[in-house]
Length: 314
Length: 282
Image 1 (cartoon, rainbow over the protein chains, first blue to last red):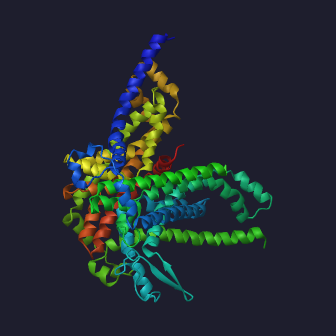
Image 2 (cartoon, helix red, strand yellow; image 1 turned 60 degrees about the horizontal axis):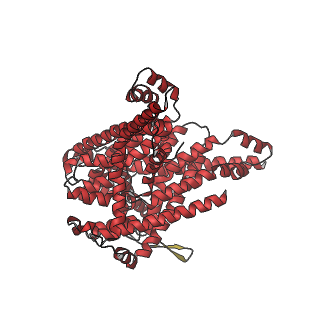
Image 3 (cartoon, rainbow over the protein chains, first blue to last red; image 1 turned 120 degrees about the vertical axis):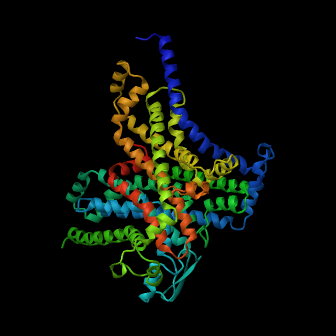
């Protein structure tokens, strides 16, 4: 048995060892993640342009809300906010919905199942540059296969610029419906690229639903659809809402996909693109940081509402 | 027919249709990517709707041009180097950190294990600007080593979290036995923890490899010198410089996609586990 003194030195040694094991990770994360975040917060309340970053003025205490004033006064700000929310909510919802459908299709035993599974996950695994360039090519108005095919079959009279036109009129039975074309394309891309993520989780959850539930329901005379409605869906609903939460966080923070597909043109400018535009288009780091902060606040509000709603559900 | 029978029949038909639909939407872009990479510029321009290859001709010229005239040979080796080094560093640091967080007692333990996941809350674009400015200022931005460090920061929190939840399930008794037999802590990690954690390490390695191999934003913002480009950066460069020669961009896209898809198909089990564990605990 160790006496008190020995035990204390032992614990101290252990804590010191833990410190050395964690310090590399801690340093890397502090320097390359925590620091940039704090810096953003600081610069959002500072009058600063890209050129100012050379001088020592960064550390003066001349705080200001000018950056936020500029951001909110920007004529496009509210349309960007709206685009961001539409893109995030519809895109997340679509990817979870497609994930649910595909998981239900692949669930159960049948030949070639693992092949299907492998194929379905590919959009998520492939590098973002490869898939965005491929889709841009497929949807291209001049060289894209979709437009050529539709025109040669007489479905279209002229090509649709899916990724470069703001809105498009769909004529259905004499009614003209205006569709935000590029935004819709980008959202569909989002659904396509990220459904495999939901697919994997839902498939895993489906396999965890006890077989007895279904058998008991079948004995009671529940039809397949009723079993889906009353057993599968309730069993899946926790994973579905968690998936939506994760996708929401990631989608609202997403930059690469829209940047590579449309550069934020044609009504697809979301807040992450605006962060980039302020920093590298106008060289206004302060305004850029301010948008980043607004984005963070929007996300926090969403999380707040989400968790309030979740706890009410339970 | 009973309601059961009718619904069953309808669902069977819907399932086949649904599978066709998903196979088509998931597979077609890849099919088109590969197909177009084997076309010539003439075929791309004159018959964009051709779903097969004209006259059974497979044209490897796009690959030749991309590899030898657009510098992709170099980009491939850069990407391999960056990804493998990121994987090795992440595995090392995450193992040490994960062990500390699960097995050692120290103040701030709980804080360390959860706060790291807050990284999810911040978009990469928010991180990229300050880092861009700082690294430009000290003249280190255009560097592969800095890029590896950035990737390390992106993957470490999740890797550490994944290993942590695996270590928690390992029996502590064997480690105590090792310690009493005179093994040092590091010896215990090396001889006992690592061999037992092989599946978890494989998942982390694959997850990290995927992140590093696919990463676009930091590579795009940080690298200026073509000799240092990773594949993703190279594809963007190429797409910006050739306007009509889509077959080149598609060949480049195939080259950047094939390795990751192959790795994934070979080790699917681990990657799936890595992806699911990487996103959620337990």
